[in-house]
Amino acid sequence: NSVILSEVESRAIRANLTHLLSPQMGKDIVWFLKRWAKTYLLVDEKLYDQISLPFSTAFGADTEGSQWIVGYLLEKVISNLAVWSSEQDLANDTVQLLVTLVERRERANLVIQCENWWNLAKQFARRSPPLHYLSSSVQRTLMKALVLGGFAHMDTETKQQYWTEVLQPLQQRFLNVINQENFQQICQEEEVKQEITATLEALCGIAEATQIDNVAILFNFLMDFLNNCIGLMEVYKNTPETVNLIIEVFVEVAHKQICYLGEAKAMNLYEACLTLLQVYSKNNLGRQRIDVTAEEDQYQDLLLIMELLTNLLSKEFIDFSDTDEVFRGHEPGQATNRSVSAADVVLYGVNLVLPLMSQDLLKFPSLCNQYYKLITFICEIFPEKIPQLPEDLFKSLMYSLELGMSSMSSEVCQLCLEAVTPLAEQCAKAQETDSALFLATRHFLKMVFDMLVLQKHNTEMTTAAGEAFYTLVCLHQAEYSELVETLLSTQQDPVIYQRLADAFNKLTASSTPPTLDRKQKMAFLKSLEEFMANVGGLLCVK
Image (cartoon, rainbow, N blue to C red; front, side, top):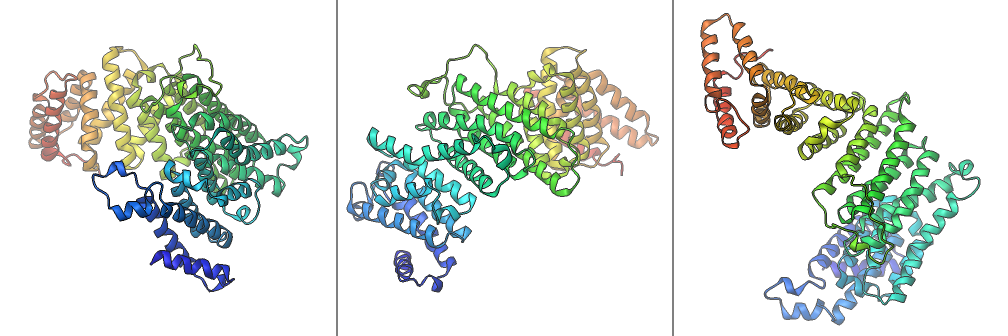
């Protein structure tokens, strides 16, 4: 029925009756076609023990039915983009249908045989109307689809011709704009800004199309742009939406490509990202934010920067490339003698942007959560790097953890507790009782002790607080005993005194002396549950 409706809609468009059609109906039709194509068109028969013969004959590999339906769906996409370019949701669903047609190689092989596909690619590369009128997000997804289509099966000459028609115009137009002698003077002209914005959106789309078999070509293509984008940060430093989009390009490249890069290529990306952050930090440090809009602009930037640093850090545990083998034949970079980990890069990046993170900005919940997730991430994966940090950065991180445990949401508090545990374990391993981290963890012991015994807290945090508390007690046994003695000495009521003394004795009875042993820790956490049930809330400060 949906295909019949789709055909009725197509005929109405050809008869110039578009004014009688409903965009919502068009959206519903595309919604169905996308899901149908993803599920039934050219399915991978190897994944099924049994498959219907009529179904396989109609829409399986090497059938006239599959060729016809691919051609029909492509026509539908082109028609919708021409007629409904101003309908954001419908246009977006339409390009998502196009992505579905090319994201699997078997379907893409049929798509590129259609003349309409090549016409669409040329039209988009020339920025011709009506494609030029599509919204930024739709143009980004359309670029992603065109790049995915380029990795279908083609002979070398045809493939070269395809890339020449799809990617080369993008590069050429961009270079023509930024290499003009008077670029600094004309950069704020609407036409120039539109060209820059369209290019940046296209770069995001190209990055989103990354797969393991195309990363070599796309990384080399994108790296040339990334270096130019850093220059654009200077030119457009007072144009927040452009700065935001430039950072987003880096976020997408790191998100989609970092896991495939060998050491030399990863180093290239690290250096580009850090240069970007240096420029951003230089342009924004000390800048007065005089209105709410300006503060929100910086919030958006910093949120993306936190995402960028998190994406770079993911290299440490999601790595599909030990060497630059995947780049062989694509100008492989020489392996460097430097061995810089993603954690080193991220910590350096944090050092650059931390001065920009005011307490006012941390009032934005999503930025606050992203920032604390990143800190926790670093502490959990690389606790040994924290004591080696520059003094100012170390103090800033410790202050952030203190702030998170005392003044932020329960979610942030839990993240901070999860960060403290590996830091205390690191201290116990190093056995350096005069280190700055050792002193910081002693302060955290008092904070967690007060949190569990003297303050009301979310019961969901008890496990995270308990784990941090146990590790801190192992590290600072004398200080823990002191805290208990001090608390008991303030109790005037003998009944409460005895109840507390018994509860504390029972709490550590199963782990005396406490050690970093999993079995002991589990016994302590169980005892802590009983402790909280017995005396939890007894001393809560209102």
